[in-house]
Image (cartoon, rainbow, N blue to C red; front, side, top):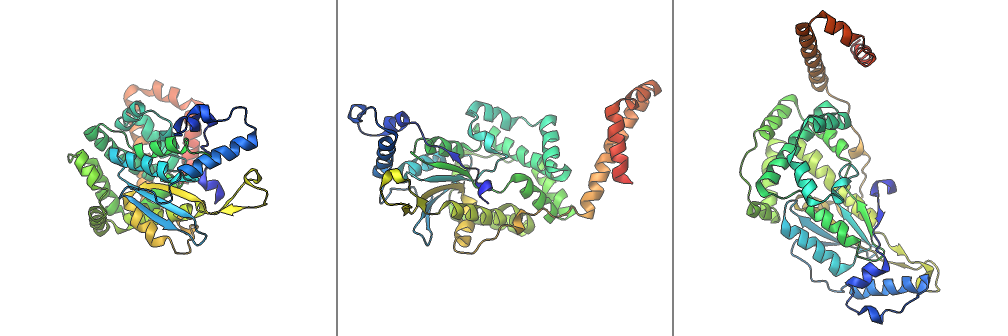
Length: 370
C-alpha cells in the first residue's frame, strides 16, 4: 500500500529552517558541505523536538511495538482553534511524517488560498454536478453534491472554508527538516460507492431529503463543541440509530483505513550514513496524524488490531434498485430532450440526430439497454 500514502517530501531549504531557529544566522557556519549541512539540519530538528511536549487536550498519543510514536490531533473541520492545535503539535514534536485525513481526490485544497476555497465551497453548479457524476457514478455523484451542499451551508454560516487544519499541517510540515507528508484517507469515490450500496432505496430518499432541506443555523461555538469527545460520541450514536450502514461505511471503515495508514507511517527510520559510520542505523519515527475528532475513538479501538483493508477497498456491484433508478434518470433526460426537439420542429430533430456525438451516444445507450 505504499502507493496509497502519496507522500510528498516537505523538507525545507536550509534558509527556511534557519529562519525558524532561535540561533542567530551569524552563528551558522557558511559554505557547508552537503554532509555537514545534513548533520546540522538533523541536530536542529532533534534539538527542537521536545522530550515531554506540551500538547493540546485534543491530542491522543499512540505507540507501536518498535517504539514509534503517533500524536493524533482530533479536529473540528471548521475550527480556528483546531488549526492552532495542529501548528502547536507539529512545532513541539518535530515529526518525521505528517498524515492527514485527505485522499488524492481532495488534495487540491492544500494549495488553494482561503478566498478561492471559500468561493468554491459556496458555489454548487451544474459543472460540479457533472464532474461528480462522471467521477463517482450517478447515485454516488448526487450524494456527493448533497454533502457539498451541507458543507456550503456551514461555510455560509461561518464565513470559513473547510480543511483549514489540513492546510496548516501542510505548511508546518514544510518547516520541519526531512518531514514527509502523507495522504491517509480512503479515496472518496470508494467511500461514496460503498455508502450508497449499503443503503436501501427508502434510506437513500430519506437521507437525500434531510440533506436537501438542511437549514439549521450553526455558530462557531457549535463547531468548537465538536472537539468534545463526549458530545461527538452522542451525535454519532444518534446517527447510528437512523443510518447504521451509513455510519459503518463513512465512519467505521475509514477509522480502520486511517489506523492502517498511520501504522504504515509509524515505522522505524533508517538513518543515512551521513549521520554516523555505522551502517543501517534505525531509530523510532515520530508521526503526527490530523483527523476529525469523530475518527479518534475508532482509530484508538483499531490501533492494536491486525488490520486488513482489502475488503473495505472493494466496491460492491449496484443493487437492482440503483439500476432501476439510474435507468429512470437516463430515460427522463432523454424524454425531456426529445420533447424539447419535438416542440422545436422536425428540422431541428434531423439536425441533432445527424450529429456524430448524438449518434455515438444513442448507439452506446441502445447497447446498454439491449
